[in-house]
Amino acid sequence: MQRIIISGCCGHMGRVVADICTGDPDVEVSAGIDVLAQPMDGFPVFSTPAACGVEADALIDFSHPAALDGLLGFCTARKLPAVLATTGYSEEQLTRIDRAAKSIPVFRSANMSLGINVLLDLVKRAAALLGDSFDVEITERHHSRKLDAPSGTALMLADAAASALPYEAQYTYDRYSVRKPRDKREIGISSLRGGTIVGDHSVVFAGRDEVIEFTHHAASREVFAVGAVKAAKFLASVDAPGLYDMSHLIAH
Image (cartoon, rainbow, N blue to C red; front, side, top):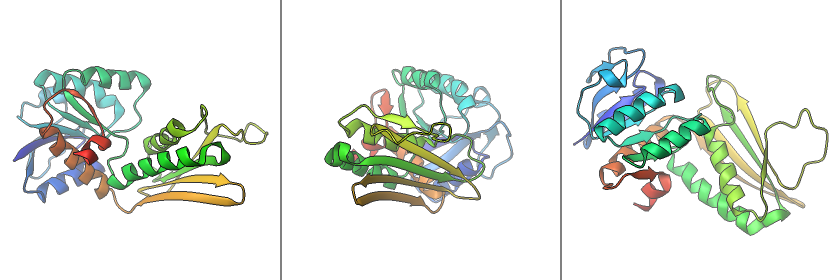
């Protein structure tokens, strides 16, 4: 039985992760961490990582980038593997994550969905085959409460395409202020926020007289929670510190 601490347990995603764990005979939630520290069924909740003295085998974080420092300090001090599913990290925070991964296993992905990670591979292959004869545009749609834009997943998709293109791509987020034809080296990224959209991503390859489009639609947040729990299980099989992602989980 693998014991998991959920950071952000009182939030929507944290509650979904707790529900997934309840239905999984191989894992249990040993504790939760949340600034709200609301009572939860089945496990104690602490307002800060420092207050949590409960033993665990891994931590799953679905909270806020502001919580990163406390969580990394907590996990490195206890040699606790961490699954970081929060998005919106700054470059400085990403550097801190890389530093922590030198002493503990860290699993980080902007999207824990298996389908999205298959899509990343397809986008990379398409970009390599189509080269500079097709324009690349990415659109993402999320609920009105999402804080970061563009989404971390949209940036992952842009990076996947850019890594296979025969030129150094430039990301363009807004064409409103610039009146000029589209540059061939652009990857346009557009964001929509509204309602309760869980997450929709599309990558469009637009060529002369033909268009190829890849789309992923998330019907519920459960797909991300399931992926995070699978990532925590995967870390149990990892013997060495390092930075891991969905490609390692899929290969495993």
